[in-house]
Image: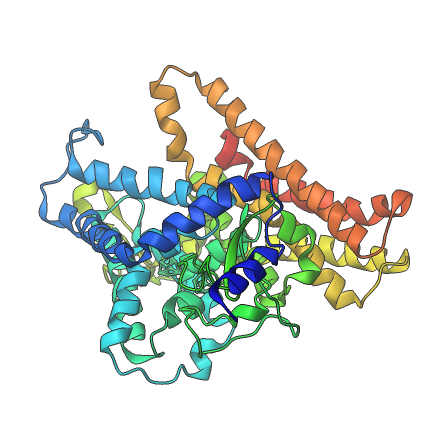
Length: 478
Ligand code: SF4
Ligand code: SF4
C-alpha cells in the first residue's frame, strides 16, 4: 500500500465527526501532546522537585507564627498548595480532562516508572494484581492520614506522602517491565481518580476496536497494562498519549464526550463490583474522617468511652503512642493518646460501614424493583450498574467537604459566609441532579421506560440525599 493510500484509508476511519467540538478541539490537543510527549519527562522532573519541597522543606523551617499566611510563610503555602489547591483541583479536573494529572503531571507515578526502568522487572505478583489491593491501600492511607493529622502537621505530610512516594518507587523498582504497577494496582489516589474519570469529558478510544471486552495485559506500550484495541473503560488510563499516533490506523485517539456518558452507558464500559464497593467504602471513610472533627456527639462518645476505661483502672488508654501512628505535637497543643487513636479509627470505620450499608440497601432495592418491572440482566449486574449513579454526588461531596479550603479565598474576596454556602449548595445540588440523571439513564438502558422508571429510581434519590445529608456539616456547617 502506498503512503497516500494509507492516508486515504486513515481519513476514512470515522473517528471524528467534522464540525463537532470533538473534531475542532480534540485533534489539535492530541497533536500537541503527541508532538511534545517526549518532553513530559522534564515536566515530571520539575514536579518531582516541587513535590519534594512541599512535603519535606517545612520540616526544616521554623514553626509558622499564628498569623502567618500562605503568602508570607512557606509552611502555610505548602499546606494550602496541598489541601486548598492540589486536592480539590485534581478532582475537579477529572470532570474536564480525566486522569490528566496522572499522565502529565504526577511526580509519584513518574518516579515509580523511572525506578521500574532501572529495577528488577519481576512479574507482577497476584497479591498486587488483586482488585481489592488499592481499596485496602486507600483505606489505610486515609485512616493513617487522620490519626497523624496530615492536614495540620508538616511531619505527617512528610510521613504520609513521603512514605507513599517511597512505596511507589520500591514497587516500581521490583515489579513490572516498563510499567506502572503502582499506578494500576496500588495507588490510593489513582483508584479515586480512576472511578471519577468515568464521568470525565475525555476518553481515549480505540480507532479499531477488537471484541472481547477490556483486558489486562503486560505486553504492549501501555504503562497501566491496558489491552489497547480492547479498551472500554477510562479508569486505568492515565492519559500518557503513548498509544496515540494521529498518522496510524491503530492505537487510541482522543475523544471528547458528554461528561457522565461512560456511566450512563456503563454496561458497555466494563462495570466492576470492586469499583462500586470502593465508591461506597471510600465515600464512607472520607466522610468519617471529616465528621469526627466537627460532630459534638463524637466528643461525647469519646468522653464516655474514656471514663469507662478509667473506671477499670486501664490508664494506658490515656498514654500517647508512637509518632508515626498518631499525632504527638505538644508544641502545637495536639497530643493524641490510645483513646483518640482507637476512637478515630473506630468512628471512621463505623461511618464507612453505615454509609456503605445505606447505599447498598438503596442500590439493591433499585436493582430488585427494576427486575420486577422488567429490566434485563441479573440482580447482581443491575446492582453493579446502578451503584455507579452515586459517582457525581460522591465526588462533589468529597471536593466540598475535604477540599473546603479551596473556597476560603472567596471570603477574602469579600463574599459573605452565606454566599459561599450558596455556592457550595449550588454545586452540591448539581451533583445530586447529575446522579439522578445518570440513575435514570442506567435504568433506561436496563430496559425500563416511561412510568416504570420512577419507582426503581426512588431508592437512588434517597441514597443520593443520604450522602448529601451525611456531608451536610462539612458543606454547610452544622
Ligand atoms: S496513579 Fe497515583 S502515583 Fe500514579 S500517576 Fe496517578 S496519582 Fe500519581
Ligand atoms: S491507554 Fe494509552 S493513553 Fe491510556 S495509559 Fe495506556 S498508553 Fe497511556
